[in-house]
Length: 198
Picture (cartoon, rainbow, N blue to C red):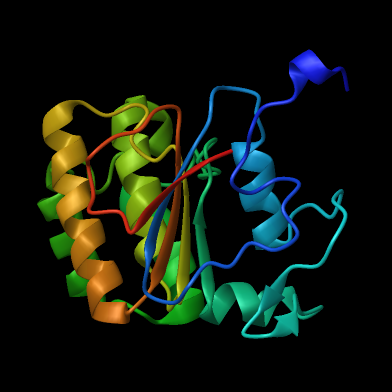
């Protein structure tokens, strides 16, 4: 890489980066700087990096199913929903594996994010913003100690963004969870403990 291509980073090329329990981090960078890659490394989707990722002092486990089911949840930038299923079915599919929310709680959450009238609508018929809200709720439908959000509000208007931020703060506070959220720019949507430049 040429010298002109190097950019200061609070994460890459550091000897050690520690994300503390129950803290909120905003990871900021322009497009193509590695935000999604970083979250994929932490989630265990990709291993094309040098170094070691540890969780509670232990190297990232080989039993990724248990790790992802109980400790780590991820809202993917590309959402990874099932277009043939309804909004509620997309959330319930994950919730059946974890049993985290009751069916009534899922319905209440859909109502809270303005999707009560779309519960039985196939995902393919929803707008991108509506799909993003479904994916957001699906990410909450499990136990987690760390929540990874990859540009989670990119398709939302201001009102829906604030609505999800309120819910996000409640859930992370109740669970004592660490939040790692990526964004193209610095924002004041949440009360971050640290803003990191990638």
